[in-house]
Length: 112
Image (cartoon, rainbow, N blue to C red; front, side, top):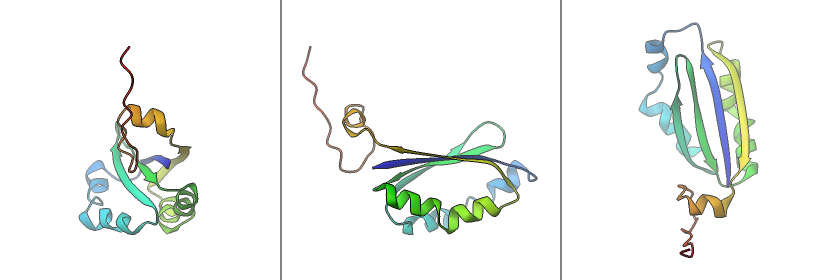
C-alpha cells in the first residue's frame, strides 16, 4: 500500500467560490481511479487544502500523479504551491495503531 499526500493553496478566488467545486460529482470522479482505496479531503487554515490518498500499489499512485486529474491541478491558475509526497505504508506498525488500511489484520500485542 502507498499513501499519496497532496497539499496546495488556492488563490485568486474566495473560500466560498472554492467551496462550490466540492460537489458530489467531484467526489464521484475519484471512484474510478485505478487502485485508489480511499481519499480523505483536507481543509487547512486559510487557503490551504489537499488530500490524502491510499493506493494499492506505487504504480497506481504514480499513474495518478501522471494522469488527467493532477494535470488539471497543475494547469489551474487558482492552484498554487502544489506539493506531492508519496510514501509506502509501514504495514505492521499501521496495523498496531488500527490504521484504516484494507487487508491489514489487527495485531494483538502480548501483555507486558
